[in-house]
Length: 415
Ligand SMILES: Cc1cc2nc3c(=O)[nH]c(=O)nc-3n(C[C@H](O)[C@H](O)[C@H](O)COP(=O)(O)OP(=O)(O)OC[C@H]3O[C@@H](n4cnc5c(N)ncnc54)[C@H](O)[C@@H]3O)c2cc1C
Image (tube, rainbow, N blue to C red):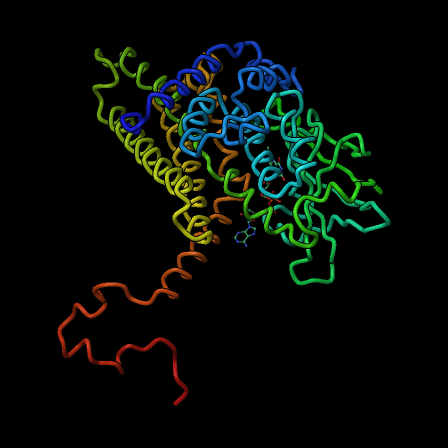
């Protein structure tokens, strides 16, 4: 659909990513799901070798200097492989974006190129055992001592706890402040980060997701990313690529294809099951939603590329994209399993793996409830700050009623 608008260069990029996706060994996918692989180094290395990581990174740091639409194209293709691949691919985009925007020249030189080339890999450590939704309540502390920050605390569910060379870690540098004065640090694993537990996951396995312990970890002051106590700026920016979830759209598309092909061949009551409305309407609903979210994602990507709006509005659009794509993926995969019947519940088709994976997007990178908090907050701000634009539809009632101010009661009055 949006393909109709792509330039020749974008079509070429899409083909390049498709070729890469085709080259990923089936055995790797199976072994990751079977938890035989803790972290798929070869996937990251090969993506880097093909210069497909961190597409928006400027040329001088090894990237291609491309745009959000290009990243969307790549994510939609990589996403078809499944959630763990989408996540690992995305993380390089998230971390390099933060380094590129907030990093010093020395930090950019040291950390971006190895990531883009797939020689290193980085994770992000935001969530703590005490909770992920209340990000600003972080209790991991960083105390300045001479030329170092001394880091103490824990982070939970960090993808790449096993596998990453360094992490972007948020810690409070001013615990007495209302927003806790968070700061963001580049913390190399070799600085003394301990991996305490690797979680057994329902799906999206093989990404080394674990709990990190920081016990008096000495982080050189030059590894502060952005300004001290202003980690919130890094966080808000990181949430843009983090919630720019186009990979889910690709995944939904690949699973729908499996279901539609199955419905076209499978027979019951003497006819192919696609002839039953209950089946073919599920296909219709699924493709309609996939295309709608695709069109929405393309619009958001274009808006980010043009930089035409305020950050609050962008935050709402991005949260809506994350929520829409997560909910759509869950619904499409669930529909697919229903269409496949019993065999869908077995590992003869990859739909059961996709279903296990598809539960996660509703939870991570901010739950759907947290996206709703952001969406309504930004919407109220836009609505109430701007007043009524154009026609005031509230007045479309008989004139006498429109003027009945005493009937427009918004709170009870004590008589
Ligand atoms: C496989 C996996 C990988 C992950 N990878 C990473 C990673 O790489 N880095 C990282 O930092 N984190 C990662 N996470 C953490 C993830 O982002 C958090 O799990 C998520 O943000 C929710 O936090 P929580 O689990 O602590 O739930 P809680 O914050 O305890 O929330 C529990 C429930 O309460 C609801 N809730 C909480 N507050 C509110 C509110 N104000 N209004 C309405 N409802 C509310 C939530 O929506 C949720 O339903 C990962 C998680 C998983 C499972």
